[in-house]
Image 1 (cartoon, rainbow, N blue to C red):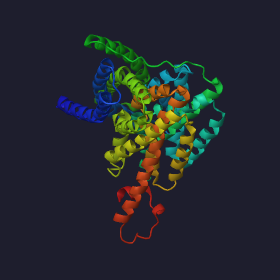
Image 2: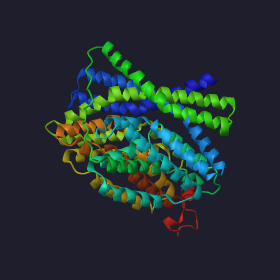
Image 3: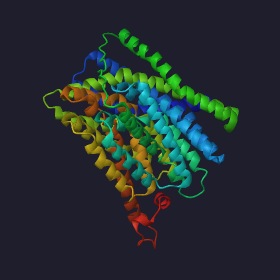
Image 4: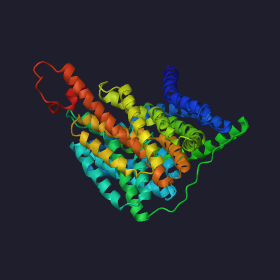
Length: 512
């Protein structure tokens, strides 16, 4: 019976993964057959990487559902029930730190930043996430309005940007985007649900969102401080090697070489999470044996999924993205890269593992009031727009701050006119949309285009992840405003017609 349930779950996850990846596959195949021919060996690597991608997403989402989500909820409720502020602060910082070190897309980004050693960047970012996870949990306990914190912290970000070397600006915002990826999101969202469950008021469920958003601010500030301390970077950019395998044996050897490397990397990344679970199980959780076994199996699924996923992305997708960007931007009409990037952006966000987790969580928390499909469409539109703007920036050399500053000002301004739950979900979505697919396909795509256009890689190509993280903040909140107006027009009970739009809270909006 158990095996039958597991087989059905695997089938469901496979279909979800396949449906998420096949549009991107079709886009690359179409481009390779028309305006951007790709060498057969590179294309073979991409196709093989697609198979790895689908299998990796399948096992990862199964593991996130089985282990990361229940573990995060249990940890959140446990440390809150102890009613010890020192325990909450120390546990939250430790969780934020170790979960960020394990984040695969942060490692992908760190390896592509030429001016800072990878381990230095990772440790600074992990410290930033740990500090802001503490702030996020304290916000939930005391019900502090999220938009006020955004005004405070993003104000600090843009003020600090005047003192940061330009080489670090785009990297800092990119770090904020990639930190909240497939490892961090399931755990942090579930942690927020667990902490908010302790509160008994009607807004507790809504306040469980926003953790991902605040944890995205920490890395931005951390990398900015690193830039001030480090000074202008002097490292060299090394273009990814574009594979051109001549036969299937060479292809198997190429992926066979990558598998053990990522297996070792993810083993050391997941090790602290496993240690955290063992310690909390011995001293706090005391879960029954069946639950312990289920979580251990879930962690195993997560491990297998991430190893396969990262191998497919780095060996197959990253070189193909770099090559495509270079070919398109070096053609007779380089501006064609803008609509191509927009189409890619619309579909690539569907292949982000953490997006699936967030969409499902939103649908469950709101009892279907905000459906996973509605969330997915809004994210796709936002990321599509952001990729178009990012490619315009790559071709023109305009500073990323000319896009980020007005974008964040608009997003924060809208937050004062929409239900709080949409603001929290929108800012969470920004971090979630910019995951490993963005870091390992779209960032190399921008780097290839930038190199072909004669731009500066660090200043012009980096910032793509930041752009992807920004636009969902606007599109999701606009969605919230539209839903609020529509619901009021069609479903306002008798006697409530004269009530202002701003008088209704989030619970009423969802119930309507």
